[in-house]
Image (cartoon, rainbow, N blue to C red; front, top):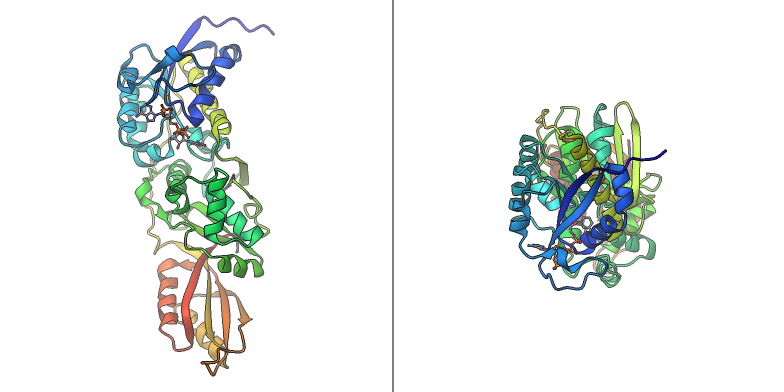
Length: 441
Ligand SMILES: NC(=O)c1ccc[n+]([C@@H]2O[C@H](COP(=O)([O-])OP(=O)(O)OC[C@H]3O[C@@H](n4cnc5c(N)ncnc54)[C@H](OP(=O)(O)O)[C@@H]3O)[C@@H](O)[C@H]2O)c1
């Protein structure tokens, strides 16, 4: 079949030309004929805003670079802007300006969307522009479009996934090699998987931004970054990993967006213990994977490289082609909706299963006393294991044992009351270790 030569040209500009942007620019320039055939228009890369216009960027003509990003977004001849410069304040104004002028925007910027997605979506909609952001969550993995389009006729009940490769690599090292958190982080930094300042990754903020975006699309409710409960991995120890491993579980940092029976939604990022048989448990290294449950489709799993210049550029290019096709047809794509306006539950009101481990005096009746704490709060226990300790410290006359308890689902505020009561009990030695569990009925 012969494809007619496109008669139309679409002007494309870029904000940023770093790890992701340089790959995107090379793909636009290097695949011009294929892109024209797929979109029905020549994609003409007209300008790229950067900080340093003199930096060597092989394969990209120097004349394309500018340091004036404001003048770039104000150009009246643009059809599409690709925002791959990152940042929130400053970037938000530039993207809003572009959308307000009817220029469609493709972005990879999760932080921007998690903080200002609702406002930018509205501006795009009011001005007939597209705002696409497949690359903002889980790099190359198609997950935004499945939520926004493929599954939009279904009712999604759960989105749960590994959306941060850095923390997955660190936890994988701790699990497979028994490494301590600090050593695993240092190794991740040496290999370039973690930044010199790893805070955004290890404290869960990066994953929380992605959780806000996923929840917004899955539940048709606008979820802001500040509404996401967030707990990172920096407090986890090799002992935690070993203890849960003995019970047949693995530790992962997960983003969870869940629809509860009362129609509230819970959006959170925290360490989770998963049965080794769970599909997410075997996702190792810097890979990402997202598991979706919906009423009609059932269970779906998406997996692949969650970051890196080329994989992320693939997702940006997919959006670029889609937005270009929309432009050629003179339409904008479907905007995400927020009509359900569901309440985002507090962590205290969220229901989970829990794993608690604590050291107790190993003497008759202690197990029953510990179990009665849960019973008195109406918490039903799934499993109770006792791990014998040493024969006792020389200074103690009674040896100790560790109790590892897994509960059925209960609200977090109830389990916190149990922890408080346990920590005030005379049989307890030390603190209670509390972790949340997924994948156990
Ligand atoms: N890297 C990944 O694997 C990945 C994965 C998914 C999503 N993302 C997202 O993609 C975006 C870009 O990430 P990246 O890793 O490509 O970043 P990067 O390597 O740091 O590149 C940033 C680019 O933006 C330019 N820039 C920064 N501030 C600017 C400003 N005020 N005006 C004009 N240009 C400016 C920089 O110019 P100079 O080159 O002159 O310094 C650079 O070219 C971020 O939102 C990130 O979260 C990245």
